[in-house]
Image 1 (cartoon, helix red, strand yellow):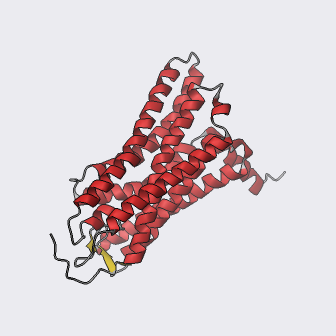
Image 2 (cartoon, rainbow, N blue to C red):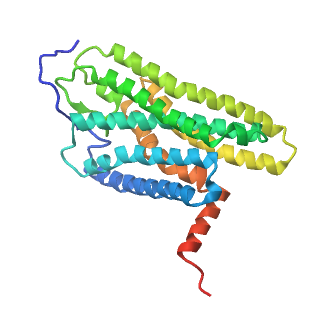
Image 3 (cartoon, one colour):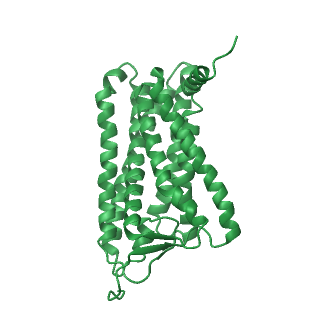
Amino acid sequence: MRETNQTQVTEFFLLGLSDNPHTQQLLFILLLGIYLVTVVGNLLLVSLVLVDSLLHTPMYFFLCNLSLADLCFSTNIAPQALVHLLSRKKVISFTRCVAQLLLFLILGSTQCVLLAVMSYDRYAAICNPLHYPSIMTWRVCFQLAAGSWTSGILAAVVDTTFTLMLPYRGSNSIAHFFCEAPALLSLASTDTWISEMAISLTAVVILLIPVSLILVSYGHIIVTVVRMKSAAGRLKAFSTCGSHLVVVILFYGSAIVNYMIPKSAKGQKKLLSVFYTMVAPMLNPLIYSLRNKDMKGAVRKVAARIFPCRV
């Protein structure tokens, strides 16, 4: 057990992604570009869903929620990481670190549940098309969305509580580019076994249970699609579901490896964190929606209003 007779930590030093000045400059340019694309892509998606009545469907409603979560998720991490790449003193106050950790967990956990909800929506649309309007009513949609955000908040409160209940005295250098629970636990001045077990159990609930629901939903979807007689129907179903599956694999794959495999190397964990905190939120609107025919039609409509053809 570590000594606990030292002063309580009031700020942390983030060691960042690299200590090489040249590498930091390259990372700043790369991550700034990724963040700008993330902001533009997700804001465009949300705006299109709001202004185009043809997109007022359950699928795009959940996609809009996912984009909002993606945008806030990336914004919680990226601006500070960009500033620190150009700063010599990479300091974050204890209070700000706690706020970042809480928001990170809320938004990340909410995304996990939203992806499961979206897979259920696709299951209802493809496997029960005749009953879909009565299954996915707007009341049900709002309840599922509210449940996703509530689940995210509850999971975040549990993880944050078990992380902050520990004393932090002595070392205050976080081997990461943002405040993440495992990185903070390594600095605690006492045994962290109970907190680690609690966080691992929360990860099982918020990661593996939604993944299981997604697998079950897509198992039924695949069976239904294979039985379809229409080739066009199969192609349309696989196109919609394929985009969603890519998003699921990108997000869950990196998050599960990062949280469920504790022996991963620190460098590998940092790269995975960059992927699911910055790269995945950028790719989601491109993969899932902007390649969609309905979204392309909405873009053309908006463009026609802004730039009307001159006769």
